Image (tube, rainbow, N blue to C red; front, side, top):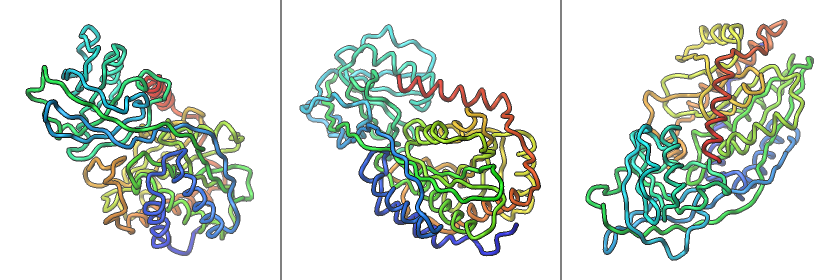
Length: 427
């Protein structure tokens, strides 16, 4: 089957703009996610012709309002980002001696005394790297007065992360994240600082929105993209673009007589440990699901499509065949990108593909305030939309499914390892 009309990237861009500008910071559980859910339900109804199913699950989330550190007695006030684990921060702020600690993932820091100190953590790698994070947990166990984590992710802005549960050790210590370049780490030993944080725990619902386009066969293909974000970002590339592409693909294929059935899903809870995808696979019968297709991380002005394939060699061959007929450069790899919903699919023994669009070099703007729709090129949506339609067309042309549900052992191990690491962050 060939889909005759071209992918409507202008319509997709309108959807993307609405998500970014009307429903920015779609943190799962927030009012913004609730409003985005209502908008997406209407978009499914408008584009495909009937209402999707909406599943909701109660969640708690942290709303960080303000965070700063001042080197006393009269230093400048440096603003940072409050984190999920700051729910017990006193409203008057914390004043105590500052102590710098350098982490490299090897030195044991538990023997140092961090009690009644504001600890400034500078690490040789990203602070979420497991071996660094283990050391950070050892610091928290000593109950410092507060913690400042210096981030090297971007020199000016801070990446938001929702990984810490409110019942964990991290909820007990006031903590802020600062760009490493903004903090004067030299000559502060022995000085005092004042740490000020405002935030609150709120409750709401995580939403999954799904719609089935039926085919003549009983086998299902899941096509999904997460609609939620972290705080302080429009989530344009991650992942309003993916949701917008998904809606237009659903609209297009719904006009044809299909062989396979397709469940199109926009997921909440991706930024809460892939919780939305976990709920889908727990609450629905997946025995007839033969493949998952994830649309995520769609950059602007890219130089290549990146496909991560979690499946057997036959699935890889199908992907490579499509790639040969594509004009735009494509890079295919066997594996699962960390933090993507396909990790849950792999854990559940369901083959999957992640479709991403990558720029020439990483600008480290994902999960930050810089991930906005400003200067986003709508043509980027077309490249992914066209490829996804080619892939579905190829699936529809196959007489029988040519790949199996046998996930290679190394990929299964990779998924299991990721969830073990995730538990490390959330304990």
